[in-house]
Length: 160
Ligand SMILES: [Zn+2]
Image (cartoon, rainbow, N blue to C red):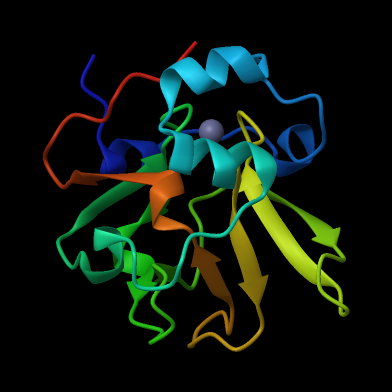
């Protein structure tokens, strides 16, 4: 079955409340994830690391399409909601419906809102309140935690 971003946006969705809290629908051990994703992606996704700014080619990706979780392939963002924040990280003003969950982390002195893939729990980035209209949100994402699928291309099957 061909799944496209358009179909996804039009389709029924799982309530966010059902996904935002652990346990996540997709559970794998650390060893299993290490077989699937690159060491750099693992550090971000499952150890809450942050890639160096400017290090991801996805920061400059301007084609229409979808950005999927590098771990489980769940579509998280549409290119239609991407903008150049000037930070050196791929930035979006809104995620796809029910695609991410949030939690508060205190890794810096001040609390920050961390967000993660709603399906596998993989850490993606942090959300800030200095984004553009209409949401005013800036989803500051690690590019290594995403994969880009150009519009018209088939979305990868969800990893199981
Ligand atoms: Zn995921």
